[in-house]
Amino acid sequence: MKKALIIIILILGALLLNIIIANDFDGFNLSDLDFNPQYIFDNPNSQEPQVNFYLNNQYRALDYNINWNYKDYFGKYIKNKSDFSQNFQEPVLTKNDELSLLSDLAFDEINYNIYNEDTLISSGDTFEEAVDNISEEGDYKVEVEAIWEEKEDRDYHGSVTSTAILEFDLEPIVSLNYENIPPGNVLFVYVDNVEEDESIELETNAPVGSISKGISGNRQTFILPMDIWAQQGIYSINLKINNNSDNNVTIEKEFNVVSKDFPTQYLYISQEISDSTRNDEAYEEFGEYVQKARSNISSVKLWEGKFEIPVKEDYILTTDYGEIRYVNDEITSSRHSGLDLAAPEGTPIYACNSGNIVLSKDMILTGNTIIIDHGLGLYTSYYHLSSMDVGNGDFVDKGDFVGEIGSTGFSTGPHLHWSISVLNTYVNTHQFIEEDVE
Image 1 (spheres, rainbow, N blue to C red):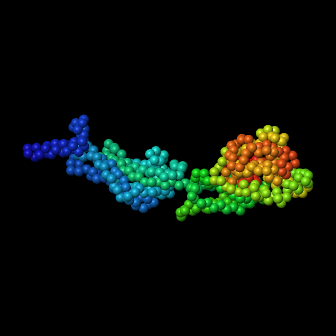
Image 2 (cartoon, rainbow, N blue to C red; image 1 turned 90 degrees about the vertical axis):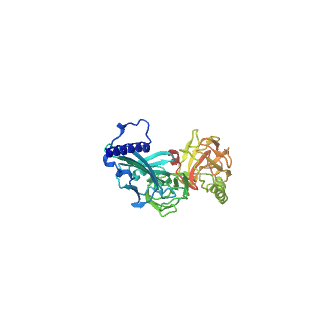
Image 3 (cartoon, rainbow, N blue to C red; image 1 turned 135 degrees about the vertical axis):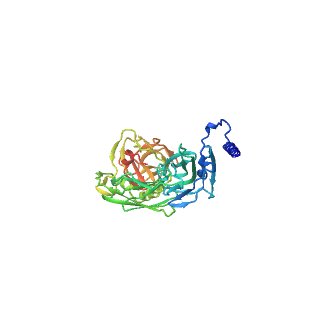
C-alpha cells in the first residue's frame, strides 16, 4: 500500500512539475498527455544535437542559435533555446565559397536564404543554388536554416540558424557591339561587372585611332574608332582586369574587319579660295583650336539615343563620309571626314544630340565652326556656317537651334559639313544616325 501511494505521489509530482515547466495552465487537461514510460527518467533527445559548419570542406566555427523541443514522460514538449557564440563578427563569404553544415542528427531540410537588408531576394537548398539567383553585385546577408520537422512518430523537433555576410562580385563579362566591322566604324567594347577602382588595360593589334573610355556603374566602356584605311582580316583585343587582389583576369576577344568600297569625288574650286583657306596658317589655326577642343575625354555620357541629322529642311547630300576626294584633279591625303549637306544659305542647323559647346569660332579653313562635346570622347563638328547662335560653355539639348548654313572657309557653296569623331579620329556618321550607341 505504501509503495502504491509513493508511486501515485511521484506521478502527481511529475505531472505538476511538467505543468510548471511547460507554463501551460490554460486549457490543460489530462487527455492532452501522452505517457511514454521509456522516458520516465529522461528523453535521450533532451540534449541539443551537435552541429558543425564546413566552409570549403574545412570545419569552421560559426555562431548559431538552436530552438530545440523534446517530449517528456507525459508527452509534453519541453522547449530549449541555446546560443553558441564563438566569433566576434559575422564571417564574410564570396560566391565561390562552399558552405554546408552537418549534425549528428540528420536534418529534414536546409534552406540558404539571402537578404538585401530585410528583403529576401534569393533562396535555395544549397549555398551555390542561392547565390546563382543573384544578378547584382553588393553586400548581402546569408541566413542558413536547418530544420528537424515535427512528426507523429518523432519525439523531438527544432531548428538551427546562423548568419554570415556575402560579398557578391560577378565575373567580368566582355562584349562587343560588332563581330564584323567595316573601316571607319566605331567598336564599342563593354566590360560589365567591374568596379570603378578596378583598372583595365586594353591592347589591340587592330588599326585604331585614339581610344576613349567611360565608366558608368559597374560597366566600363572602351570606344575604338576603326581606321578608315583598315585592311580586312581578324583582329584581337586583350583586356587585363586588375581588381587589386590575386584574382586578376585576362580576357581576349576577336572581331573581323570587313571590306568596304568608298566612292570617289572630284571637286573643283577657285585657286584663290584654295590658296586663302588651305595654307600653313589655316592648318596651324585648325590644330590650335579645333583639334585642341576635341582632345579631352569627359567622364560623363551626355548624348541620349540615336543622333539626328542637324538639318531638318530639304537638303542634298553632296559628299558622303569616307569618299576619296580629288581637289582640282589632285588627290587629297585624307578621306572626307563627314557629310556635306547642301541647302540654301540661312537654313537652320540644330544640335544632333545633347552636349557642351567647346568651340564656337570663325576659322580660316572651316569658316564659322561649332564643336559639341557629347561626353566620353565623342564630338560632333559643324563647319562653314553663316551665323552661330551658341557660345563656348553653353549646354545644348538634342534639337536646339545652334546656327545657320553658309559658305564660309574652304567651301564651294552653301552647305553644312557635319562630322562625328572620337577625339580627333573621324568616324562613320551613319552609324550614329542608324544605331542607338551606348
